[in-house]
Length: 218
Image (cartoon, rainbow, N blue to C red; front, side, top):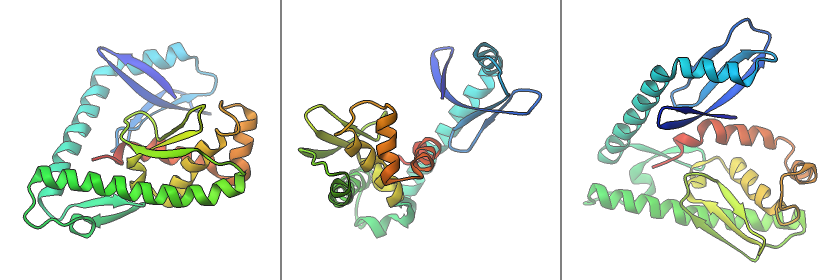
C-alpha cells in the first residue's frame, strides 16, 4: 500500500507488479485504487504516474463518495438493503422501521450493529482464546474510521462496530489478530506465524477488508 498526496488530499493505492510494459491505474466502484506496473518500477515513477492523473482520480473518487451518500439516504427511505454478517438484508428485517424518522432509523441501525458486533465478537473470542491459550482482560466495541481492532499492553481489546457487516470468517480473522497481540505486541514473524497457525488463509481476509472495507459503512 502506498500513500500519495494529491493537492490537499491523501489517497491510498495498492500496487501490483508484473510482466507488463506500462503503468495503468484502475479504480473500482468502492474507490479502491490499483496501480499495475512493470516489475521493478521505482516509487518515484509510480508517484509521478498517479499525480499526472491526479485531477481525474480525485474527480472519480468524489463522484463515488457522492453516489454512496445518495444511495445511503435512499436506502433509509425505501426498502433499502444493509449488510449484516456478510449478507444483505432489508432494513425492516434488522430494525423496526414503523413511524421512524430518518434520524431515528440511522441511530437505531447503528445501535443494532453495536449490539450485534458485541455479541458475535464475544462468542468468537471464547472460541479462539482457548485455541491460543490467552485471556484478554476485556473487550469493547467502538466506532473507528482507521482500524478494525486494537490491543493495548493492559490486554484490553477494541473492535470496530462495522465488523458486524463482515462475513463471520473475516470477523474471526480480526479477533484472532488481536488475540495474537496478547502474545506478540508487534507484527514480527513470530506474530504472523501465530496468526497463521490458527487461520492459514488470513491474507485473504486482510485482502477482503482492504478491498471492501470502505463499503462496510453507514
